[in-house]
Image 1 (cartoon, helix red, strand yellow):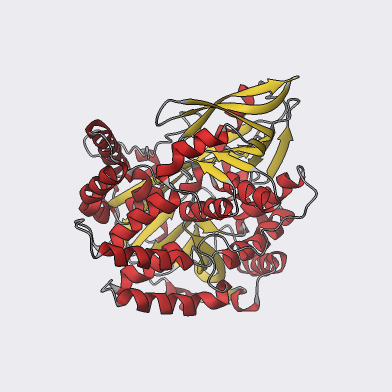
Image 2 (cartoon, helix red, strand yellow):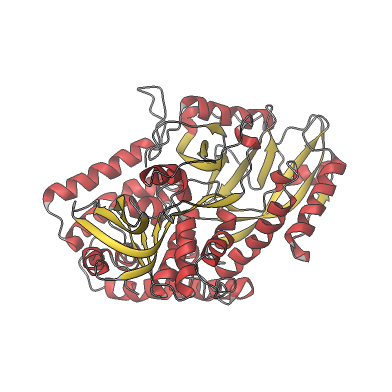
Length: 547
């Protein structure tokens, strides 16, 4: 697999001499899915991402592969059915990066959902999504509900629904899909920005792009160009001068992270807010993350901000649902903001706009895929590639990178075996479990690198050295922020770990890439900005997320 950060320039140079079948703009989950689907159907495929892979919406979601229970309220039965079934496919193809999460939906006398409507809705949800018997909904009484979430508001509580969603690491999922596409022969490059299109007889035949790291320019040719840039979808259409008809409307979703010691929640919960919305609170790695907000957004796309107002909104929802939990802004350990690229519907509030996806083709031949959800990425890719080739999609039963673990049934025994292997290297049990979850079947490569690490003079534990070396050689990790934010998720969920290891990781990457001093300090500064960006800054009384 040719996916090393050290090979980027070589890959870019050689790509100028290839006539591709499809050029994909956008390295989020949608572009990743399209690259995998196209390549497995035999198309010569190249993908360009102007930031790091998954740096936009695909690392800033609620990190759930879920069936869209909320869309039952909007009577979008086809959408619920489709994404519900896709949820199971995503899980089977990558059980290391996706796992079932029982979700509790409390029911109150004056709440959005009554007991009958909740029971009926969840049963309909199970049927539409084809949920397997072991994961079908259960209805709980007050006593059972309080056993699971004893700190929940008791006044007016009449029970709860208990059903399964699937938790994921959205950035890792995206990376694993891209890696599988590359393994199958696709080319994928980060930090490459498409600046304009190349035309012949008013049809697009390629792209002009710039390597953001070197400022070197390239001309890449291809038979078809697919715009899978999410929030930047209309920006690319504007470049083609083809915006007409439907447009995108961006909404912002904010999440905050607090320590489980401050908010001792052991059970994932999906609860009503006073303004009629729904919010998740989900345990993960000794933290709880809460979200999301849903507000229209019109500012700078690359750096959506988390404001004090956003944080106070989410903190208030916790106070309303958990009256005995006292959290303030200084209890927020990290936060992130993501943008949803929704298809504009006049007169609708952000939460009411459909999450369905659509495909548009311009007169020049530019294909744009817009809307959609993380859960439906594989199906979205299948539909758009269907327009390019008659060969059927090959991805329904194709494990993504790291997913060769025997499916969901085989994963438990695989994990047990690999954790046991890691313990022999004196890796802590909790860390061993995290490593297997991060890398799946690729953990064997991590262990191989760990063996090499024992003979090195690097001031890093063997497993961390293996993580960073693997990230560079197999995941095109260019700088420390890529590693700490999108390859490991640690910036959001283990801030102290980042602080502890940032210097030796930067030093190792600098030596590996042979960075000149000014570049090392530039990347160090970028990581420091990212660290400062995700936490509350009491000096200027606002929160800014800009990762």
